Length: 407
Image (tube, rainbow, N blue to C red; front, side, top):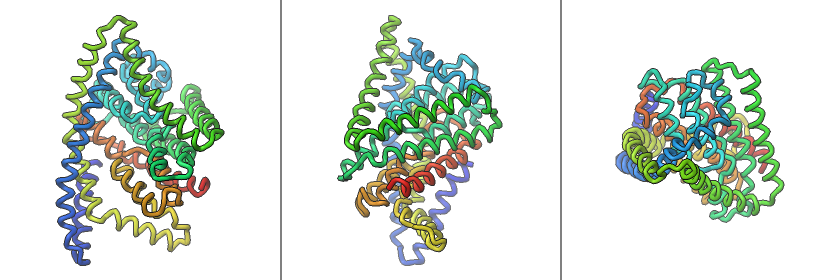
């Protein structure tokens, strides 16, 4: 699947460029050529930037693993994972990394979530019978990750604040609902595809508990005024991030471990992982960059606008579609599209409102897929991509509908 999609980006871009050439836009070929080199450089730069983050967090993960902290955290969700990942051993250390990854995503701690997610994928790979084909557990983990619930979308709130929004936190609740729908849709689609029985007391209790937690979070933040939501979100995310660092180190000291040596050992693993990711990341970003610079994305948006208008549906949301279409492809691209929407139509316009919710409703699926599966050298991702894209679509559709409801 990924093989055909990757090749498809280049082929569609080539066809789009030919059409534009006939339309008098001869400069399109130079734009594509520039994109080839610039995105290849960007892929390496992202991997380079990720190296330091990976070294730091995987160093801390090594301390957590040896101190037993990751095992302690894993106990919280182990009963659930035993049911939805039956092929993984009950005492697998992967559960601890998975729990910390999911917790980091929920709290909007991107810098911690990615390294912990890569570590979880590596531990799941150790129990994977096929070293080139994704296991069911890896697919489920990837889908949950690419549609991750974000309780505190601090970066989006800060971008809206910087753009001069009168109420930056107005998107908070719609984002939380949209990202929850995305994650739940991806989870249900994956367990249905893998024929996992979730109609049991254990799984349903976790699902209902998660829904209740999100509901209470929505209610709690809804009771705050707009300024308080932004400030509390900002303080909480940063305090929790540093609190995690302290928790890892203190847990090692309590166990009388040499935390510095353990950190260095884990950091070395982080460096090796970063090097392995580079080819996969460059391959995916170049394909996406060519697709974008060829004008193919503009053709898609124009076609959707035409269809929506012909059907007599309110087309105000169409101006936020660049963010929606770019989001699964590129995080930086989607962010640029969102900021461009702010600049063109206004941060507090309907298009700006929709764009903000869409930006927070899903993850960058192709990036996550390239990084996570690239870290363990898996080339056959099986159903991971279509299931993750289904979750993306559900999140984006929910974001648009919620924008009409909340705006």
